[in-house]
Amino acid sequence: MHSDGEAIRVEARCTPIGAACPDCSHWTERVHSSYLRSPADLPAAGRSAQLVLRVRRFFCTATGCGRRTFVEQVPGLTRRHGRVTKRLRRTTGAIGLARAVGPAPALPSSWASSPAAPRCCAG
Ligand SMILES: [Zn+2]
View 1 (cartoon, rainbow, N blue to C red):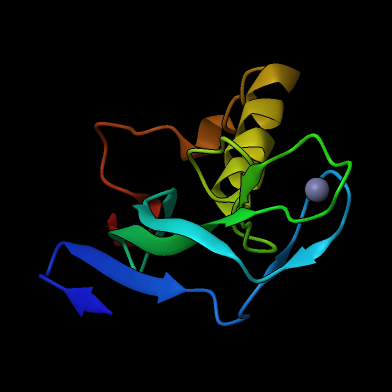
View 2 (cartoon, protein in one colour):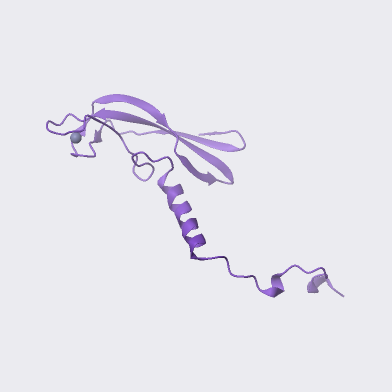
């Protein structure tokens, strides 16, 4: 994990030596290649968070499976073709839902700013 004061960068990789094919569930340990993925994540402690995942592409070795290669997924973090983490997508989805419900209710008039001094300090 690195921090430059503004952004937090977390580097991670998967530890299992293999992965299951998403189509046929066949377990394979034949690695085709690996590359870095950077799904955006929620801010952490008020700073932007960048997750850097090293993911691997595997060969599916099952006979009869139409899929030749696939990229491993990290449970709870990534999904196929996803650019953001599940956590960030859930949060932004909740915000979108709240906004879709309607505008925020008006604040009580007593909360409105007034040019007069607040009552607690008047007198
Ligand atoms: Zn397969």
